[in-house]
Picture 1: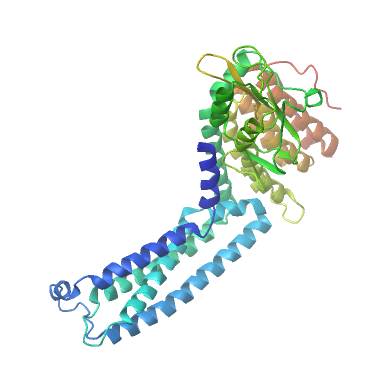
Picture 2: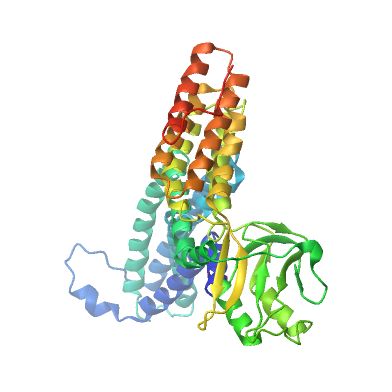
Length: 454
């Protein structure tokens, strides 16, 4: 259930309509209260310079003027937002747009405009039914003026924020922070199962050997946005079965694909008699969330690729900005040490009696390294100024490695960088600089036995 909540929250949190909707409701409610507040006594206690309104018609004229001006301001703010989103999509990649749309400052700024508009509209509607000799809504008028002034300053701050938000370094730091948050939150729920799978045998089924009564198939086509392992564990315990999943968050499946298997043995060591039951398959399918888009909050490799896309755009011939690519490499280096806790590509869940219930395929450090560095290395194979920081980051990660397998993964990436330099860098001096950086990575744990460059 928690993973479903995360998926819903990511959809809502990265939309430009939800927060303004809340502000709109708040503005309408505030207007209802302000109209009904007894304003004469409060205004009488204020200093003489405080503005006072003699008739309802005066308040209506003022509110209409403020409303027209604010609508123009809101249109301008939306236009600026669309321009920024267009520029960001072109220079930083279309998948970074979700970060702009999910920015709380942008959402709150647009929400303040919409909320003030709804306040003024509601006030005009309520004042339309009042007679000239009725009570003048002094509080509503002063509140409308105050909200309008606040909206003016919000507009200035909003434009300033948008100007900063499109700077590449700012985007890189923000996407990198989201990546670290995704890794940290995933570790909270997966670290135990990963340790269980690493210390005990956990095998996944061969898709070709599955029989039709025990196979788990994809309910629909799309990306696996997340798997609710806690609820899936409850399903396995309830039906006394073992579930093995060969898919993980981020993989693309086609409806009918075999994505897992219901185990042969139940808790009592016998084959469950109802593995053909549609209820069991439906209950399992409900815990595997499939959609048309990947989710950054549940899919670590997708969060990595958001940063990688910024680097690839920067390295494209049309932009040719190696400094942005270098900034991405350094930001990846800051996040990848946390990923070392994903030291095994599977997870194992047990029930309270210690019975194995779920064995599932997970992302591991090797896959994350491939997602982080392979495409950047391939695009920058002839650029020593980009390959050098990549080797330096690998050198730092080698000193932080927690498992021997991590060292081999890092050394293999260093070898790939060395081969790319030997193949594509024409200048001997630049090529040797990259070779020295690669050799430092290899010498941290072993001699250069299998690395040679002509």
